[in-house]
Structures are given as structure tokens and as C-alpha cells.
Length: 123
Image (cartoon, rainbow, N blue to C red; front, side, top):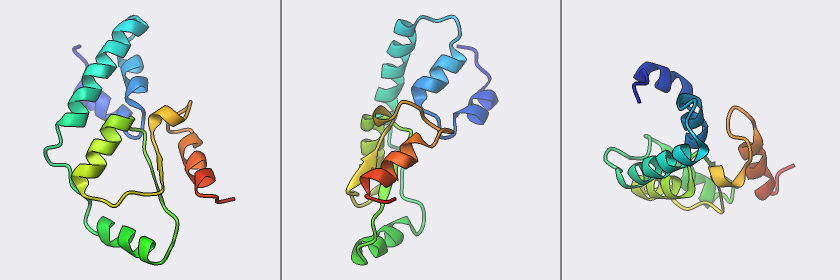
């Protein structure tokens, strides 16, 4: 689409893919944007090369589990992308897994984090 990669990288962090596509595809119909989203989602859910847990992540999550400390995964990723990358990283499965489909507003709005806290039973 002729979009500057640096502009994309400066914009995308933590945002839902659909939000990014709408931002960088002005003038395109919602049908075109949705089609591009599905194409991108398929790529992101199947190209798992290089996906791995960050150093210390597994030990931290195991510590939380062992000590019955509630934790959740809260991501701006869609269900297919989030679950594929979660599996590829080899992380334990949380009781609460919040994805883009569960909230109306992604980052920088706090909706996903607030839902995660609520589902964990936190005040």
C-alpha cells in the first residue's frame, strides 16, 4: 500500500490490527479493510518463526501459579493470533485470556486491562 514502515512501527504498538488498518487505509471501504484484516490475521497466526517467551517469563508465570497469585493475558491481538503465539511461546494457560474481540476500545484505552482485572475478580 506504499505506507512508510517507520510510520507503521511508530503507530502499531499495542493497537488492534483493525485499528491500524483503518488508520493506514484511508478512503478504503470497510469491506476492503476487513478483507485485509483477515489476510493479515492468517499470516500472523501461522507465521510463528521467532516467537518465543521473553527471558524470565516462564519462571515468573510458574511462580504465580505455584503461589496461587491470579494472572491474566491481556492482548490487543485477535483470538487466532494471540492463541497461536501463546502456544508457540510455550507459556502456561491463564484462567483469564482477554483478546481484541472482547473489548470495544483497544489501547491506549484501558478497556482490556479493566476487563482482565474484573474477570480475575480484582476490585
